[in-house]
Image (cartoon, rainbow, N blue to C red; front, side):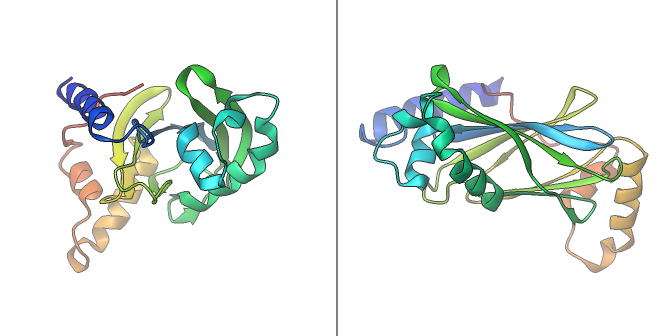
Length: 207
């Protein structure tokens, strides 16, 4: 709740401090749903950011269902190049299942799935969606069995998050990481898991 109030205050401060031509809500939202055979979810991007990256003079075309398909391929290429996931060390392949406008949120939603060979133990997410904006942040919600299990925020100062799942595969991944624990810099995700799942304060869902 505290972070929700802080996020709201940040948005209000940006709206006041930035010129009217600047982006008042520099956020993206990634939902990641883990299943035995795939990772699926949605990525919500503000039209302002996407229009900037595609070199469009205005974002209106991105919110129109009739014209958005003309830009879908460019949006998919942008996402694939700037948001990467690995499962147990293997790079995952994007399969975009839909791109649709969200006019009420002045945003575009990208629905996706990523096939996996087996249940994931160790997931790594790297997001650097809009580097032109140093205060842009990506809010991430991770679900297992439709239960929200972790939330992360990635931005300019921290672009990678690691997550160990709660099942047997996660325990095996943690064990493998611990084998090299004394020889590498401490891994915060492993440390949390080894301590019995103790978590740092997490961001509240911001939507």
